[in-house]
Image (tube, rainbow, N blue to C red; front, side, top):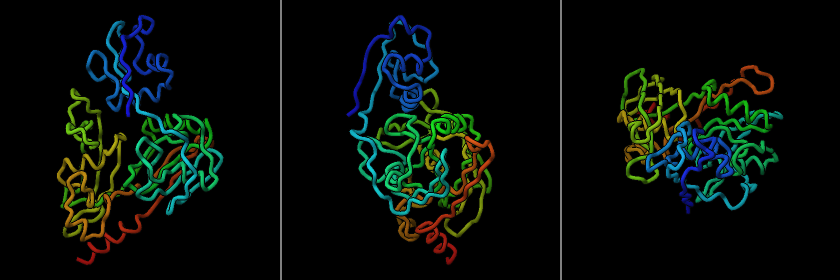
Length: 309
């Protein structure tokens, strides 16, 4: 259960940014407050606040604080979790579907940090307790490449690189139908009005955050199209939401409107979405490093089925 904190803004925080002021007030990190604000969990006088809004003395502040996990992520071997690269500063993994990027309230399945702990791979202590070493995320149902920080310096450098958008994240997505060969979606994303855990294209005035997705066609099949997707931003479910808004949802993504008949025909139990390439400047050497991962398992099977039609 989430805890609601309600109180007036103290005079001593007048003019401070929301993330800085609430960090002092609640004893949280600025990063954690920023994440709460991005999730719509911080309100000032009844309006959702962003992390850069300024605090006004006497304004009524409401903060939804999710209950933290009861314990650190347990060591739990994860089938299919592959270590692609390991050094004292970073670890790059190929995450299978069905594995969470980090522990969260209500999630009892496997996690990437837990799987790495079972392999004897330690992570940075930086970040909230449930996300130590985690500098970006993949959806539970999305497979592919993730980088995690092992040193404190690496955590700081990589978090900044993701904020500065200097990390190249490339995905492949198999979508229903045939979108334009090349295109861009520039549409804000926020929580779905239904409040059921989904996300949607939502006006910025209603809490949506700027989100930009680019795609190009790799191969067109009779019923579907394989796309290469690049992100300028990294919102929750961004690719899935944007492609669904175009009426070309990821094959198998029943949450966002995919055809269950086609999913069954292709043998898909989850969305066809895979992080195929990750490129960034190594936090220790400064040199550009690139890692690749080919879709496998049911994703490769789905392509074989389509190629045979």
